Length: 192
Image (cartoon, rainbow, N blue to C red; front, side):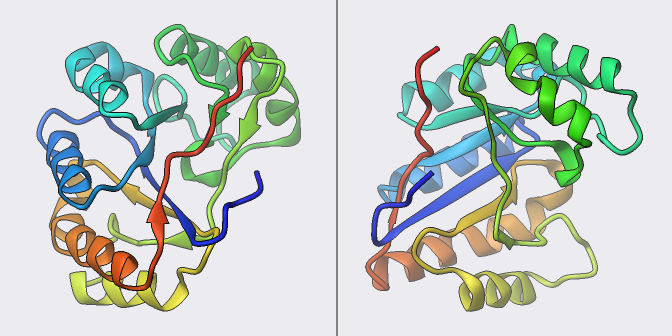
């Protein structure tokens, strides 16, 4: 996907979460920023009102499988079934493999499993490391700000595991990106 000059794509994996995702949405709103949320189908099923809020506030969503399958450890038929099950709840042509792990046979079946001819597997170029408890919030912040540039896809996690780091870094990153003249936009989805 070609990036508009001055655009940064903030992405959030593993939600929706009943506490953290609404907090993320509030912070994004306060900074006039849009993002893309790669959702786990099981979480969408449990927290449909949070998922609806993501969409209602103009953010994009993507499929992150139904139960966060690791593509390297999951048989292809099971992986694609999980993707298909999530697609029943998440109408998007965007897909992010959990852990960034997907085998070629799985990638080849994503479009059919999602019901989209133009399915896009979306990875990232900046990993915030917000989920890693060995990283301090300050280290996460420095890592993102040192590596982000126009067109970057930055991955965060709207999950309990990442909350300590995320709650510190997200407002700071949004403030810094705005000062640098970047606009945070959602990734574009294409029609079926």
